[in-house]
Image (cartoon, rainbow, N blue to C red; front, top):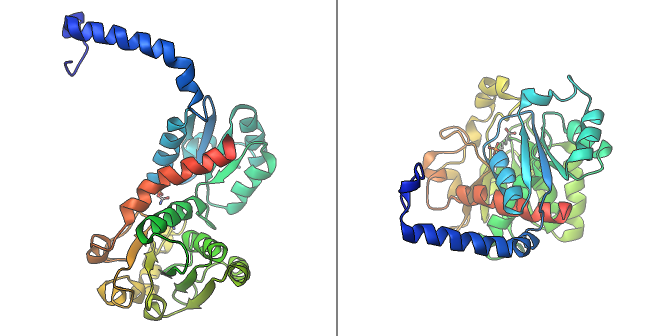
Length: 306
Ligand code: CP
Ligand code: NVA
């Protein structure tokens, strides 16, 4: 077959017959094929107040691969809470969509959507949490380490949304989780308390320190994220100063287990929170994490939307 089908003369007799035969098979098997598509006909509304590469692509592709479709709303399309209230948006979308995925500034926007919607709402990142990222991260840890028990994980940098969700996940899964942050950039207090309670029940532990090397001592995983998250970019300059000694570099990495993996949710700023040597080095699994966003979110959508 030629690359293009611009004219009838672009196919020869053999190709012509193959297409007709394939069309007959597709017609015959259509119903059966549709049965294998678990989210056939379901629509995921995808609301974004912030930019995204991974979350948008993996949700849209994920729902498509499960037989449904995603509809993307850019930040200016809905103008959540300004053009229309969160409550009314949730009530409208509940009439059409089978699920809502939202990336927001205020966490209360996601919880507000969930409160007023009759369909599942998924947090695709808020200022407080990024739970979908953490699902993919645990899948990645499992694939790389062959277990989720007795994992030691150091999060070095900003006590941000990724850190908060990792705290809760570590509490639930029994991880020995250490956070090293500069003073004034601690993770959310309530979430830290909740994570400690969860860790008490699961056999995990939560350590909060201001010393990156202490946190990284003997760990299986070193995790970091940008110093200025979306919504805090205007603080980038002062944060660069505050975080200067919290860079993940070879010196910090040397404190970890020799088979440690380096994780980052991406996007990354090389030369700030992590050096190129580390993020582009042999211990880095950042693109596995990115790939697993697709697979773990498909599993999540099957749980919520089937
Ligand atoms: N990690 C992550 O959520 O990436 P995006 O901001 O590109 O979606
Ligand atoms: N903490 C980062 C994560 C980006 C995926 C942010 O919120 O910008």
